[in-house]
View 1 (spheres, rainbow, N blue to C red):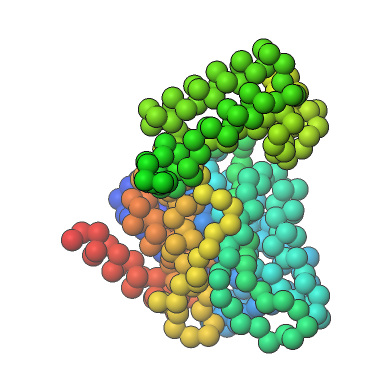
View 2 (cartoon, rainbow, N blue to C red):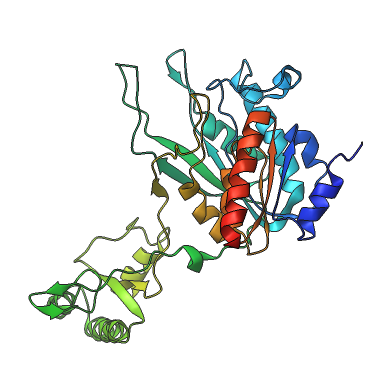
Amino acid sequence: MAFLYKKQIEALTHGIAPFVLLRGNCSEILDEIPNESIDCVVTSPPYWKMRAYHVKEEYLDLLIGREKEPGEYVEKLTSIFHKIKRVLKNDGSVWLNLGDKYHNKNLMGMPWRVALAMQDDGWILRNDVIWNQRKGTQSAKDRLRDMYEHVFHFVKNRKYYYDGDSIRIKPIKFPTINGKQTISATGVSGKKYRKQILESENLNDRERDDALKALDETLEKMRNGELVDFRMTIRGTQRTYHSDNASVSGRAKELKTKGFFILTSKAKGFLPSDIWDIVPEDQWRKDAHYAVFPTELLKIPILATSKIGGIVLDPFMGTGSAIVTANEFGRAGLGIELSDQYLEIAQERLNETQLALQI
């Protein structure tokens, strides 16, 4: 095959260019990208039967989302991500945003059809993030409003790059209760737990002593700033998390063997949850056909699963949000897109980003 984009791709992989935008069929262009050269993929392919995209007539048959049957759509996307697996580094990640579709009044479950097909192809699914868009319209009067989409996090291998510290939510300042500064982010002092331990009829003497010692050690770590919060579960007092069955729950096993367990939050903060409240971005929306990827949605994937200087790929680039965000956080970006209109907007955005980074 003729390698049409070899020089542009080499400029990116050799660290010469901060971004490269390529026009064409992503399935074909992926064949030109070297093995294991991409650190992270963040993308939102066209949804099935959701929008009409403006491309040249010669590219119409290449558009994803126009398939008559859902299985055909799933098969096309799965084949593209199969190619992505080759170019992705062994410790790399893929973040895939997909919305669902009602067809003949039937909710199709398209995101999960794709996710399950990718698992069957060997991908490991680490998270299903719910993107709560916090607003939306709906014409149907016999069902609830649509307010969320899925963002799936896939990896090639069980061990992969993940910088959790870069995305941790910093603890809030300790509150003042009754005029006194607490040592806990939520006002937990340990007095209630101490009383429950001393009065418990479900602990023997040794367990009671061990529980008091563990509580004192935890409170000391709080005073030293090593922890910002904790919760203690004592046999017969609080409910077990997840399950009371010791064979399936490590916490239940601790309760059975020790009589208590303690959950702590470290001072460096905690990881975000798998529900993201982000309003869709509309600054670069030019007409009703544009589905702009919010840059706020891209921060966690790029910061957590790519290194500074690494390469972020978006094979369905659209207006370039993933590439812009990659550049803003010190990563290079590779975008692939069929639409000339989208490419022009992405180029404009990236020119502005580079100019701002140089100031």
